[in-house]
Length: 553
Ligand SMILES: [Zn+2]
Image 1 (cartoon, helix red, strand yellow):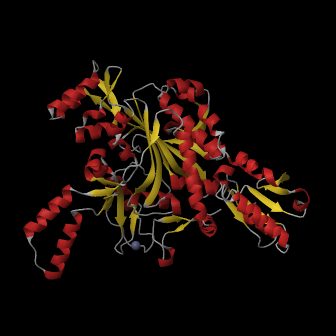
Image 2 (cartoon, helix red, strand yellow):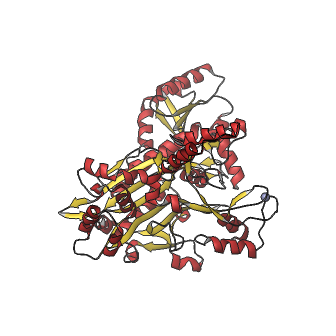
Image 3 (cartoon, protein in one colour):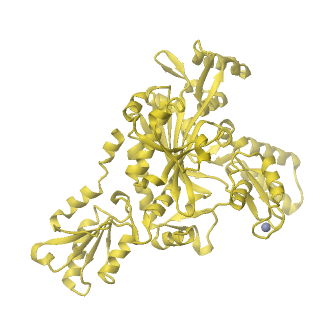
């Protein structure tokens, strides 16, 4: 299916649609509709029930979406979170790297501005919309500023000036200084909320490591060219789990799964032209740390066994030295294959860590802080520490980042499991919708409508009456849809297309033996069960207790 028809399908069914459609929509923003919101909630709950259960000390927190600029000075986002931008004289703006990738079909991730400029000049690339020349590429920071506090002053003063032409220069400068020193941003990733709260959460959780802090929530990026509906938006939702630990706490769990295979494309195998190769975890030992391999396997399980993404549509994609995000020591994308779009990044597994040498500490002016940090070295010359914890420790000088574990001082390392909620919703819908049969093959526990109830004949009052009665009985416990319009075949097809796993029909026999038919979506098999057994049947079919076994093994 092509992307336009797929998006149209999702809009018509009420999964998602362009935000503020009646005013022409707004670029890069989408709304979940009545069905999409349930799907999203169910996805989030599955995610929670899976990832937070992987270890006893994993918790979810909800930090603010608005953060002070010092957070992003520390994290490096203010300086480094940029995209290359180019524009034509008519004001059409593009992300230069994506434009090259799309027009020339070559990968340019990791190239410098200079190299990107050279490609544009050499290949004589023009604006794809109006065919005029493209400007020199410059860097554009992707964070969305939030207007809070002093920022308002500055803009009011500017407005005064524009109206009256008069200006108090001192006042303006003072306002500008406050504005510069006190900027706020909407968070570009949820992760920072977990890092800045680590010193608080480690005390609340009584200094126990590993500690996991998950955040599910919105993040904002000033994307230059948003596209493909939920794939690249300016406001999106992430589900991220930050795991703080010392070194080998997950080795025992790894031992249990080391003979399992994962789908992976390593940098060194890219040339071979395969989408991925299947590798046993143990064969990657040494190349990747055991904890990393363990969580890779768990992520794959989540996609294959929980979301039921077909095996050949899932892989881990290794990023090269050049392509990796600046804070990552190991960096694999989690990808799902969507026909006509190709492999799409839906998540990532990031070892956010840096190597610290004793001599690095000489730059730290604060002697007290330096002494404290020296304690984490023990008798070693270098240590590996979590990138973000390190940065926030230096910026905040809050020494609670350093934890005492068995009489040893440590600055924990960080493993981030990161997922784009909307991209996952989009991919699930795309992959599980079978255009040929018109069936959306969602696992029952993900279906927005859990069961539909029909009278066989809408013209027969007693059918309608009984169906309504059963609908009323079920709807307080389940998400139920009642439908009595159109032929029964049409009603089935409508439910198939939105993924409803079961349809209940009331017919003549219902009045003889108090039974109904239940039709299974994928097999079209029909069984008869007693009206009094319907609730038990649904509870069993929709439950997610099977997750226990997947989490454990
Ligand atoms: Zn143009």
